[in-house]
Each structure stands twice: as structure tokens, then as C-alpha cells.
Length: 133
Image (cartoon, rainbow, N blue to C red; front, side, top):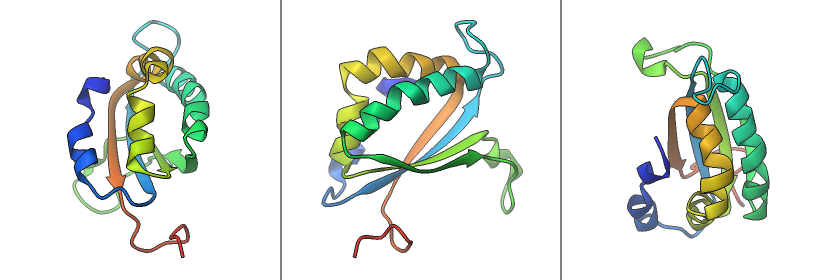
């Protein structure tokens, strides 16, 4: 789980004419790999480092919350601790952030220390309160 896991080719192949909302699913480690507290502590450091990078590229966190239980579907597929929706003005803005030296050196180490698994799914909004008019 590192920036090398980035599907940049797949994202660049998609239409990039408008905003993208990234669905983040996070499974936290019990203890941070570097011994600096819990996985949650490390993920909070990641979030603090990443927020200015997201905002600098015109992005925003729409929603975040604790994943509690699978309500429908295979329970084993829902083993996540935390969910975040982050909206970027474009896929290019997201790619610019996660491929930056700043992200690689200041944010990603905290993500790797805190997250046992981190899945990010690029979504295109079809309906919702955030849909552009």
C-alpha cells in the first residue's frame, strides 16, 4: 500500500471534464507501524498533512465517518473502520496531489503507518445534493 499502488493510467483514461468524488475506505492498524501511537493516531496525522494539499488543489472533504457494520451484503467485504468522501475539481487535481513530492514525504508515511488497507474509488456523481447544475 503505497503511492506505487496508484492507478494513474486508469484515472487518466477517464473523462476529466468535471469534479470527481473519491470514496476512501480505510482499515486501521491497531498500532502505528512506527510505534507512534495507534493506527488512528497515525491516520489523523495523515489527515492533518493532507488537508492543506487537498484545499490547495480546490478539493474539500464532503463527509467522513466511522464504518460500523455491513447492512446488506457479505460481511467479510465490509471490514473497514473509516469512510471519507473527498471531492476534487478534477481527476488531474487528485493525481497532482498524490504524485507530488510533498504528499510522498509529508503525508504518505503517516498513511502507511496507520492504515492496514486503504481503498480509494473514483466516482462520478449521477444524482445528489452536490451535483452541479
